[in-house]
Image 1 (cartoon, rainbow, N blue to C red):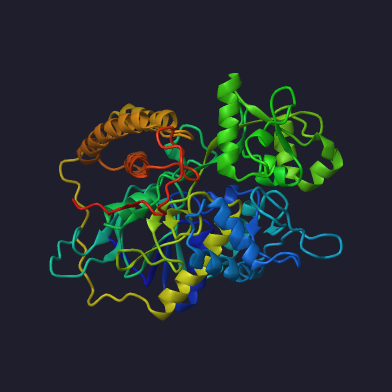
Image 2 (cartoon, rainbow, N blue to C red; image 1 turned 90 degrees about the vertical axis):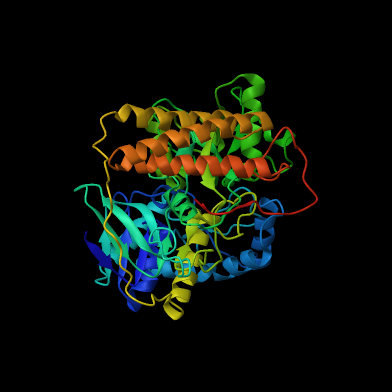
Length: 531
């Protein structure tokens, strides 16, 4: 079996993965793996922007307060303060990569505002910020000879000393991973004392999501199977305004549209948000998503609407060129028509328990970005804090690893991947059916509003499905679909188990059986797999 050795193994090609690799490149050999092409990630689809205090009437203290309010009291204050204060360095990193953020005619930054923010502090590049950042980082990373890029490479499992290698007397440590080349079907190993997971979220665990098809929770599931602690998985953020159209797949109407004056209305153009929250259409996402869900259930309407017609065509085409063009392709003129929207699974606020510099509960394993739970988001992410977190934590993780890298005591032997009696899969319909069942089950039972009964039903069915998936996994040769299904099922059960442990309604977790806040603030922590 082929083995690739490196000083740093980075998994994921979004903001967190690319920036971590760029910071580490001058300090050792970096292998960067992504399961499709580099641009196939959540970062590439981010429209709104990146939070960073820059206006004279804004402050780090104000940004911290807004983040804490959105997080429903569960944010870790020292973490928020650190990340908010480090954000300007992250913006500078992107500018060095060639990102051209939007400016006003006078040359000052064209900062925008989104729901939950008390000031304009969001850097953007038109309405395709993520795409512009991703393209600039990819151009930069391809110029680095120290970085080996492995596209179409799926991580099967992390390799740990005590579990995978059976080294009973050795400390529990991650020493790399088995990976699958999805083009050649070769299975080989990456051996590294420092593995960084920057794999994004798990939006595809739900039937309706604005995430790309790659968002199957791989990093969270990999870390859990390797023994890492998982935190606050019950907090799944539903983006309030996903375009509702039969031909529109996962297209978001950015929160910046509301930040620039759009109002949420019903089919007759009547605003409704003020009866749910005094901030109206600029309330935080959890409140807006629940309010839209409530209005849809109350009226039986299939969707609600955004109204920004008062801004006029010239302004809308200049400020939101991509969104305007996309809506127009579906016969919706933002300057004349109401924009139909529905909530959709968007962001995982929990994940692998990690520090701001990426340290997890497993030696040699770091986590950055959406797959990590640092304490920044608490019970609900403030709009545009995600890319900021990825930027800052990538920088801080790389700084820790370059100064205090984990070392292997000796060159650990990694055994060849064993296929046993596994045969080529001949019933792909089984994988497709289980995939569909998980996503429908999660949408129906573990969505925006939850109950004890629905969660119990979801957990029982998921346990059965995971046994069926386990049997399928060992019976047949691995494929990308099988690996994603396996990871998706793990994430689904982690979400349900976490939701059952939280006996209150806080932030993104709202349950009819415990509708009030608990007086005790706590995180929901699940131990890593012990089998």
